[in-house]
Structure formats: structure tokens, C-alpha cells
Amino acid sequence: MEDKFEKLPQHSISWLKGRSTWYKNQGFWTLQKFHIGAIMAQQRFKVQPPSDTMLCSFPKSGTTWLKALSFAILTRHKFDESTTPLLTTFPHDFVPNLDVDLEKIEANGNNDSHDSSPLMFSSHLPYTCLPESIISSNCKIVYVYRNVKDVIVSHYHFLRELFKVPIEDAPFEEAFEEFCQGISAYGPYWEHILGFWKASLERPGTILFLKYEDLKRDPTTHVKALAEFLGNPFSDEEVGKGAVESIINLCSFERLKNLDVNKTGLRHNCERKSYFRKAKVGDWENYFTNEMKEKIDNIIHEKLSGVDLVLK
Ligand code: A3P
Image (cartoon, rainbow, N blue to C red; front, top):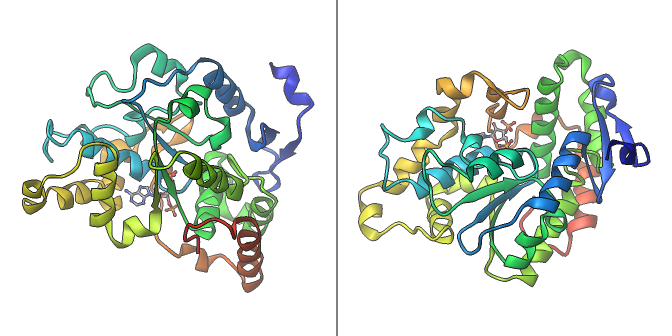
């Protein structure tokens, strides 16, 4: 399979000092190993409807948070705030990624040790690149998305840390330009969103869109909606006893970021702490010039004007 990559469009990420070459295959950019993981998942992964649920996202849009919330919602009758495995387990370990953890999924299922049901998997793949069994089964999908400008900043810092490039050696302007050319992990960003949006029209009721900024602004409403969609709604009694707030607090950025398990250790060569940076809405304002803002706004307007999601 490696020969195939020589013929594909490829790009050495300039601001990562040539430490990373990305390839475009099946319409999206990423590292060779993730493309190989995607192809394996497409060939082998079989969804188990109706129980399986997919958590999907463009990278840096709130995947870690969504995984923690979903796990906490589905296991709330089994664990309380002092016994939940969230205190001792990195959130990504509860919800394996199709194109990265396929062998683990095949060996163990989703989560043998915590027995969360229904099963959940995650993926950053564009909708049309998901394994055929996911598409044909109409399995439930939660898609978390985020303001593109904060995604660009988050993506920049995440990759910089992954490839150990100090901030003074990594010009943000170059990262921005590449992102605008569609060269980003699983990019282009706009095609990712567009794919899930179009799919939601074709399979109504099976894709829940959650916006990172909405979750931040009004977590109660959106955590309740997530629980309902996952088939595990909060009862009036639970709401009255503060069960929703307790899950929101448990999965809050401050709480998760400060847990030992999330401060130390690696996930696929990447430090777990890199998944918890600032979690600030509007951090882009510290990085963007007016020209950059105008440029990306124009791109989003041009590419996603037909999409009925609030993307600003
Ligand atoms: P920033 O880099 O802006 O801080 P992903 O999980 O898809 O990789 O996204 C990572 C982004 O989500 C990072 O954004 C990270 O700080 C933020 N994040 C991680 N955990 C969070 C949580 N519990 N609540 C809110 N944001 C969170």
C-alpha cells in the first residue's frame, strides 16, 4: 500500500520544519498512517445497529469534551462522581477511534472494562469516507463542530506541540495559509462540515449537530439533548436532583484538565495534556489580523453559504 502514496498529492508542512508530510487521498489530507487506518476501517469495520453510535468531528472541534460527556451520560446510573472512571481514564480511551484504534476495537469492542452500552466509536473521517456499514446502517451520529477561526488556532498549537516546534519557530501566518488551502488534518474543514450536513438531509433524525460554542454557552440544554439522542434521557427526577449539572461539572475543561491522568502520558505519541489547552471561545482574536479574518470569512461564506448551521 505504501507505493500508492508516492503518486498522491503530498505536502510538507512548512511551519513544522519539514517534520511532517501529508497526503491527499479520498479527498482529504492527513498523515500516511491515518490514511492507511482509514482504508483498513473501510475494509473491515462493521457497525452493530441499532446500538452503535458514532461521535464524529473535524479535529480540534471538541471531540475530547464530547467523548467525556457521552461516557458520563451513558454510565451515570452505574457510577457516581467519586467512582466514575473519568477520574482515572483519558476520555479518548472510552471511545476508540475507527481509523486509529481499529485493532483495539476488533480485540476488545468499545469498552470492555466499563461495559458502557450502547457502544460508541469515533472518527475524524469525512462522512463519505466512513465505512460503508456506518452509512448504510443509518447508525446514530453526533457531530460536534466549532467556529473555524478557533479551530485554526487550536490545530496550529496541537500540531506544533505534537512535532515539538517552539512557538517562535512556527509562524502562525503559514499555518493559517495552509488551512485556507484546505491543508489541515482531515481537511478541508468546509468539506467536512458540508459532508455531514448533506448526510443529515439524506438521513433525517440520525445526526445530532452540536456546536462547541453552544455547549459552552448553554451546556444544560445541549447536554440534555445529547442524552436524549443517545437514548438515555434525564428523567424529571434526575433533573431536579442536579444530575445534568453534575455531569457538566465533571466534564468541565477545568476539572478534566487538572486530573493527573490527563496531565501525564501519551496518546499515539501525543501528550494527553495537549488535548486540554485553553478552551476559550474567541481565542482567535489574539492571532488573526483583519486581513486573515476577512479571508477566512470569505472562504466560509463561499463554501458553506447553503449550509443551515450557524458557523460564525
Ligand atoms: P483549544 O486548543 O482552543 O484550547 P479536540 O478534543 O477535538 O481535539 O479539541 C480540542 C479543543 O477542545 C481544545 O481547544 C481543548 O482545549 C478543548 N477542550 C478539551 N476539553 C474540553 C472540555 N472539557 N471543555 C471544553 N473544551 C475542551
